[in-house]
Image 1 (tube, one colour):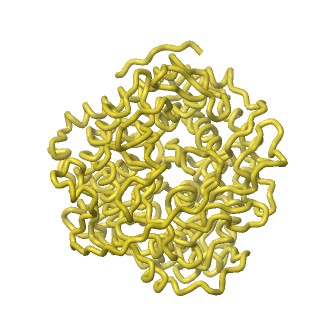
Image 2: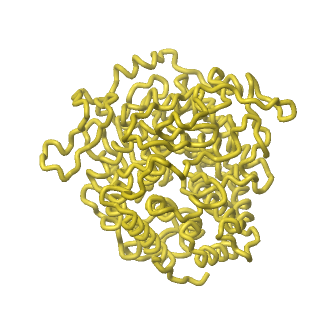
Image 3: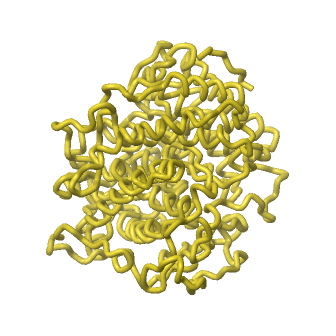
Length: 639
């Protein structure tokens, strides 16, 4: 591939739930467009959008000039390294960002090079999770853009080369699913399958965050095997949940026994929740929705210490680890998709206060000591907090999220800039740089920054103005709700049981949420639409109830009743009632309206490490638990 330096410049479902993808309404009559944010005018929003674009090309050009076709860039020394499989990882991960930016020249030349040169018949053992979300997802997203001229980025000479590569890769990953539980191994050799000495321990996120990419592959190739194995993996994990509807962090894929029973929304579990909702939204499969409703309800009940989230024992709900870790920051964005805006805003404010304190979010922040967790001081350019900022601005048009985005852009531009790209921050307190740049910086971090400010300036991109509604994968790849992907096949709603397409009489079941979208002050879920109302600053929002969230869903029947997925492991009979367990091991942060951390710039040294609560409820009885031993497997993005 010639390196050219870029300029910085099914049909209808039975319940009517599956026509459209969940998205935010673009038009909001209550938005005042004359002032985008305090100090951020529409013109400045355009400048910030161009800054984000320039950041992308500084890193992309650095990769193409100094690292391509190796996997990733060393931005400080201007070199490259093979970190995943040795197949131009960063280029694949960047494809749909190039398309979003409208860069037809580099998108087309990149697709052409990959189609001619990329091969997967190599003796490499790779992470199933990382290869799926970065490589398989990148190929599928780019294929769907390049093959469809309605996107404005169609390539005339394109002949499905990326889809052929994606199918070849998918088949090479299938041996990982050959386990007694259906939960896949964490790694697989692309030429020889799973090694006999491969670890039988995998993470919940690693086994449960494959449904979007494999599901899309099935629908594009008309081969159901990819979708089937990933759905079986989700069922295998959910069948082993505790009686509190919580899942642990690590599990033995042969015995089905949990090897780490810490339940949370962050490391090792995070995107399991994300893909439950998004698989329903993209494919219309109600089974994913039922699991999400139960899992989400349990997370709010046992993990949520308003506005923070903690880790608890999956059986007893006793707090074992009062820690904010950076991967939790995706959660407010997921809550926007679920229509639960008010708690998302409070949690985002708390998470953002950590960013403001240090200039970045550390991998771990201890809520008991209010300090950076030892051994978790780095910031590897993660996108999750920026992603949630984008979704909350999209839902509310609240100017605070543009201010937050501006702060994050500034931190990255001046704190992480390196000669050939952007560097990891090895210590958020000293801002020491590390010579590494993950491919997801181009796939997600700068993508969400650009989308945020483009939305504020007047959106002109494929996601906002394109022919389809899109779901973002956990790697930030855009997957369109085209008829081929999103129309349902055999997923009908039920009236007490699973129904067949031929005999179903189309009628909606009652819901405890009115279909009148004007009753909502924030984003709520109606069928498949998030309705956007007045800014949450002008009215308090009620959290959306979990039962009856979607029209056509019977709140009285749970997932096990409908699908017959029940517990397959015994539960400790000493499990105590959930509410009493939480009361006896609660955090200092107790259901306060807003809890944030003071900025380091505060003049009072004694207040710098103090939680500030609007209710001034000072409870000093904080725990100082240590984390359980985690998997040694290296899965740097989500796990």
